[in-house]
Length: 613
Image (cartoon, rainbow, N blue to C red; front, side, top):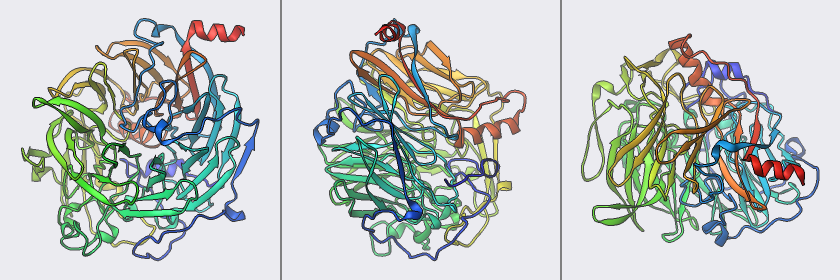
């Protein structure tokens, strides 16, 4: 197992870039572009291992039809449905009885760091991933282990983000993207490897943490590594064979549309990484993906708009061809990745139903866009946290005009709000079609500072254009809270309610349900909570073993509804905590132990009945 110096990463990491103090242990010359690689059986040095407690008793094949219309009882993909709304229609657990929620079972994963993956459930079988490249199959009703897959990671692997955000299911296979940049297909019943495909070279700074997206028989993944100056991409693989079908780069090469936005070059090392799962519109046959910051951080070191960084792109999953894009902000200079994929929501607005893309951005604005077969149209953009960088938005295109005093540059320090971590980082928002509210896990009142410097690109080494001494974070004067769960009416673009967290940041992915509830963790008190979806009132909470940064899910087995989530503090939640302690060691002091546990909850009466069976 590859070792991670957590203290080194913690001290040397801020923002989602997760700055590492040391470069990759080995370096390789740049090839100037990726070459499709055929699937292989890993050699002995990379041999994977699966320990099987007992075979999966039954596995219902996952089809295109089931992915497009999943049964209410199941949670078959990262956000349950292709639209990414994070909504479960199950309502056995509701606002009237959620106070009776109690643990049904729990399972310790055996590893530390950020446990961010949702428990994926298919007809009573649960699949979870953890840091250090584990996939674990569990009986979703009892928590019994069915099998556990452990990938042998290279000894020279430096993990800037020790996490994994989950599996994808298709046919009779489980698919996982690994931190050493392989795509692995496992037999869903046994956990045995079916095929592996090398996606990129980890020694050049590439790695993967996202859950794959599957549509039309293609397994789609993107890669991390923007802080190493990689060239971002999305790649599609044949689900049956593992053969690479296509690869589309988020940074256009010379002669390709969009390359002219790199006016003085730099596209070869331009960043634009894709490290969160995309969403899919089956009617348009388009997959939507968010893209990360450009590299290096300072915009004046790479003049131009820098397409397709800090954007949403739409592509055909069958051939990977880009069909449309929208750039949220151009020439990024704040490390504001916009990798969170917008939610697909139909919104009543302007006297009609608009098929929308809704994105609470890291740049602190709530964006509404209209999705079409060949374009993405700007509809609106409003700040959901305090933001002092944008002077205004173009009413037709949404292109921001900047307050230049708030834009850092080479040898130029600038202070700005929100901070490098943004108004919302990677934890996904959720939308409830019954309340018609969007729920945003926001961080308010945090500001940042940056100063840039010139640097040369060396493959496999950091390419930030800033040092640790050039990065700052502060609280806005008079700030009475940081974390804030917000509920927004998208028809009016108005905030309906908010629930502040006085002494904690918020890194909690959101689940909302047909029972009129919102579930979320993400605070440094280790609590997992249920809120009234209409009012924001806390209806239930329980302190877990660690901080909860996992994506919650809900499922049903034998007539009982369950709520499931992984608890395991780490990665950027820990790094922000460290920075807050530097600001105010008394107010923000919090002991958040590490260690991963899968928690599964049900109503007390149901748990007692099962115990008697």
